[in-house]
Length: 135
Image 1 (tube, one colour):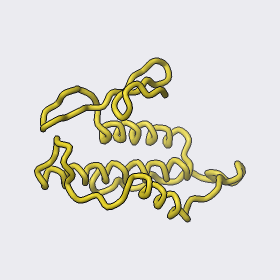
Image 2 (tube, helix red, strand yellow):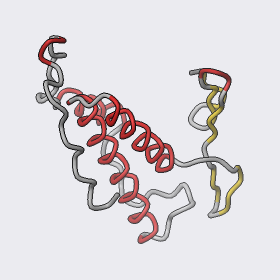
Image 3 (tube, rainbow, N blue to C red):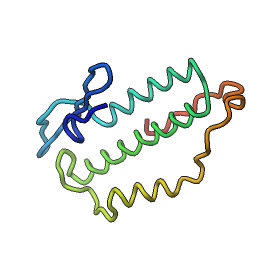
C-alpha cells in the first residue's frame, strides 16, 4: 500500500486504487468511498474467508469489523442529529488527542492473547458471530 494523498487516496497492491469521498460545506467535492463502505466490503470478504477456513481469529476479526462499522454509523447519526454532517465542525467536544486515545486502546487490551500453537487452532468450525444490531 502506498499513500498517494494522505487520508484520501491510496495505491494498493496490483495497481488498484482506493479514493475516499470528500465533502466540504455539505457538498461532495470528490467522489469516492466511505469508511463504512470499506468496512462492509471487508466484512463480506472476511465472512467468505471464514466459510473456507473457519477459525477463532476470523471470528474475532468479524466482530471487530462489525464494531467499527457500528461506531462509524453511530458517529454519522450523531453528526446528522447535531446538524454538522458534511462539514468539518465537531459534533461534540474532543477531549483527547488521537495519540492519547490510541495509547489508551493499546494499553487497555488485556484480552489480546498470543497466537495459539498450530495444533490447537480451530479444532472445529465456530459459528459466525451474530450481526451487530446496527449493521
